[in-house]
View (cartoon, rainbow, N blue to C red):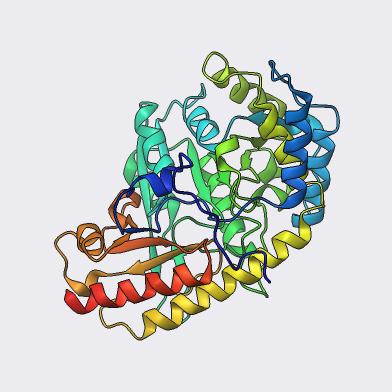
Length: 383
């Protein structure tokens, strides 16, 4: 039996995802966590840490930075050094910290649209301007292309930071090397920093596709880049709040740490560190491989189902477990409410910047995905 043939029972477990529609028969397919138990080596590491029985203020152990460096080299061919690493209680915290750094005099932050909500909230909450750069779908190749960020920055009155989400949430795009080099060239020309959230890097579903950390492409790119990474998505650990911020340039690293001071605690969750170290130790590689196989099959199932539904389409999804579906042809006044009436709870595209779409989380068992597809079809037929 596959490790992922059944989903865990999450009702009554304080799950944000499952509590939202508690007491109803609405199927929750929204917030980005999966319905599977963590890999056995992670559970064992947590068990050992719990059995220690003391949970005082905690700092990273001496092995953790080397585990991170080894994983990055092995998975993404990126050689980083331990001193480049700053640990963070989650990547949302890190994203907001970047937008609060000193030296952002121009006040503009170039942000793709659509993009997940933390990217959309962070500039405004830091008193900065969000300068949006739109995605467009190449109808010939079926690939998402990002408009020229330099033109957007010029029109928006000047920028300090280029935000990048690769692989992208919500459209699942994996940026190729040439695309990343073009973005890096724009950043160099505009003298922008690059903040790259690469948390979905282990969730690439295409067999002939690989992840390129943008900071790995060249030393001059690395020196202006802040990379955010975590095992939270691939290993289903978001509630344990563990992430790493990788910054090669010492001055930039100090700017980030200064911005974090007084807002982000220095001590980390000991359980989050134990889980993160186990996830990236190499002992979970086979679990991750089987997960990718399962998610790829789920994606293919959804793609085939949607192809048979009038009014809904889904551009090809290269990565993540988040289906990004165009429902504009259904002409719904409130798409989210319509699907909820048909007992399917998804994330409305409006919260990512595009109300023509809905986002469906297929990080669950096959039976649940099949039921979601049935409800999608019923909802579309009733529109």
